[in-house]
Image (cartoon, rainbow, N blue to C red):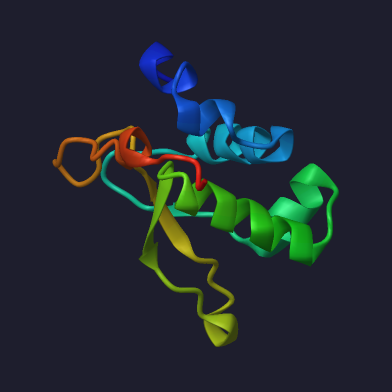
Length: 106
C-alpha cells in the first residue's frame, strides 16, 4: 500500500496509468533487505506492452522519484536491473522519498 501523501502528490498524480501499474507490480516484490529485480522483459509480459514502452515506464518512474537504480542489468547472466522503491526502507535505511522533490517542467 502506498502512503496517502504520496498518492496525493503532484509526482504521483502526473504518472501515466501504466506507470502506476508498474509501480504496483514492483511493490509486490519489495523486501527491505533486497533490491527488486524487475526488468523490461518482465514488464512487457505483465503489462502487454512493447520494449520501448516498458523502457519509458521505468524512465518515468525514475524521473518522478519513485524508483532508484541499485544495479544495472547483466545480459550475459540473464539478470534484470535492480531497483529500490524510494518510499520504502531499503537495507536498514529510511526511505528517501525522492518523489517529494519532483516538479513538472514548465
